[in-house]
Length: 63
Ligand SMILES: [Zn+2]
Image (cartoon, rainbow, N blue to C red; front, side, top):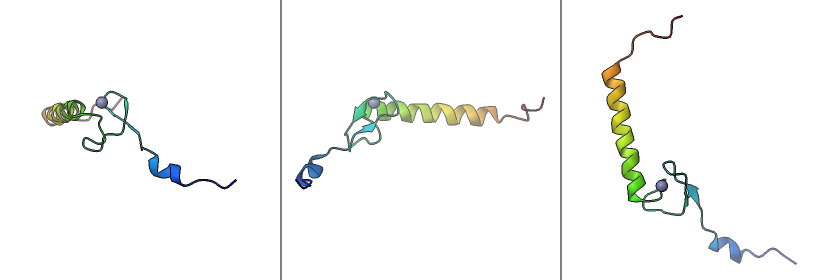
């Protein structure tokens, strides 16, 4: 028997939401599963960049 290619068109590409870890096929909010997770990530970004900018860390890695 030959391989049927018809099935490949039906394959849904799932990806893992980086926020909640859920597998999702959402295209609209890629790479997230939903607007909620997208918003959460945006919030994380703001927080992180805010912290980094506020910190402006000096050489703390000297031992
Ligand atoms: Zn998610």
